[in-house]
Length: 250
Length: 134
Image (cartoon, rainbow over all chains, first blue to last red; front, side):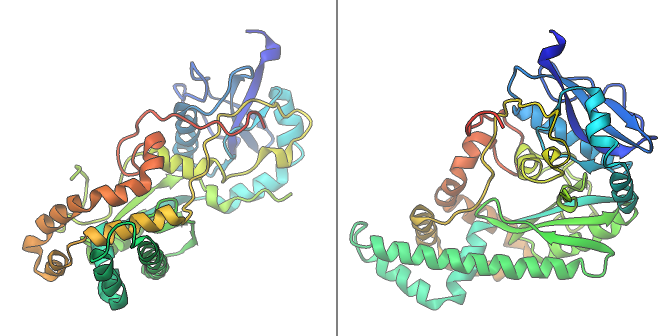
């Protein structure tokens, strides 16, 4: 492979005193060896990557996330969005690290001791649909009417019913999101609500929390999960790199 | 039920997967994080990215018809029993769940084809190409 077909993939920015684990694997096939480009107090996590092959296989995506999430468990990290490639190591220093050194130092300082945690809740379909029917008797009546009609003749009614269910589900999602945010209200964290990415999503929250408070976060979510038994399955992911809490300031 | 380290007794605590599923990763790293283009323009390399469409929930007539089918199949009398004590809770749940599964499973069908289930194991996923390089 010649130099002209290689680029430098950038995962994120960390403090300069971080050490990369020797077996850390990056994107690409075979996986690139993860390395650092250091400048002043900061460093970029990088790996060499061929530029004549497309990136974005599932392995590439998980390698990107796993490296940054692994780092975030130990040190502050500014995660890059997937897919950023520069021409070479010098360019990483000259164009990325040097011009933005102080800005990155400041952002890393703010993240010290903190990481992102994702809270995902998934509805038990039958339970939540049952709730919707009981709370909206007119939908149950519409349902009965549809049952007495042929498939073709009831198409418009079925669309109306489904739309009403969809709206009721969106309202439930909003209410349950608010309940979950309240359940985390006593903790010292920043919460942001993500858009649902699945129709059965009940709650989709990103939290920036102190890693030494993780057990408090788990306890609060355990209480909520108990309360929602048979209704919403709750999942907690993290510590993760703070993707939802970094913004390109340009 | 997966094996999870949880406080004993409840059995209904928050799940703590040790790693993110591919679907979780896709929800995160494709449209969040610092954008290198915002910092670097000169030496940016235009490498081709196999992008996966961001996962969004878009309601359509198809969605509505699926929801209608799901509630039409729902056995409300079975559902009301869910107010009973915990003893029957679990069985009730798994029983009724399988009943209407077909309908709402279809809702996530497109995603599952390529990504595998959110909550399940990572499956090798294909990607839809969305144009070519950046």
